[in-house]
Length: 265
Image (cartoon, rainbow, N blue to C red; front, top):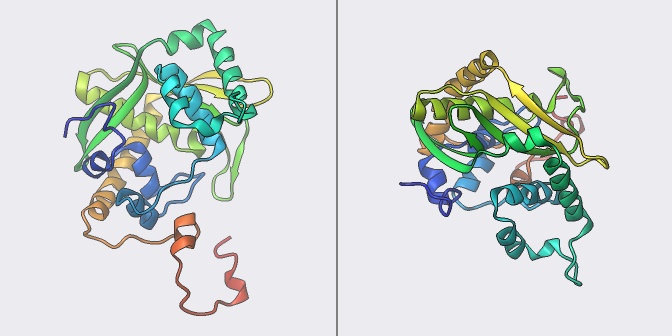
């Protein structure tokens, strides 16, 4: 299957190729637990994630820099009031865009080839990536719009950490760098071009070093065979019991003891 902008996000493409978002659905991140059952339901068209305002604001900013904002607005009329004005959340997206465009260095990093699709065979599966800003021979750049950029995320097992590790963007960086390398023979640096949704929008260009990316790629290599087996129907997906899909499809089999309510804490 040859990937295009029109079919990149199709179910057919998702069944044939692995992507970082699909990988995270199966394996989770530190910030979001995995659910194999939910991941398979998405893949089979049995479950769709609900649109949230937070995600839509990020998509609005993405669409602007992709050059597809008019299409995004037409496909998502709910972002407008009855009077035809942008709702407050999306006026904030416009503020984020304006702040980004005031910074010359940020715009230089975002000035590459837009939405470049590449594929590669890795660890027993074909993979697909779509690069926000590709600067051939120089850099791979991914745009992220976050609630805050310098907020320390906390987990019991790992303590405090930055949003890059918490949401697995370093894993995304590792996959993107390797796919580009397999296509071009060049191992390019990966940067996150980040902007915040705070009252005063913060911006940063964030570099993730290659030694860290090598570690994350080993993690991907170790986990990919399980995902391939799940997609091929060779193993039964495990239910997490906590996500919206598991709640929606839950069938009670027995009463539980009250001490089971918190699970493992």
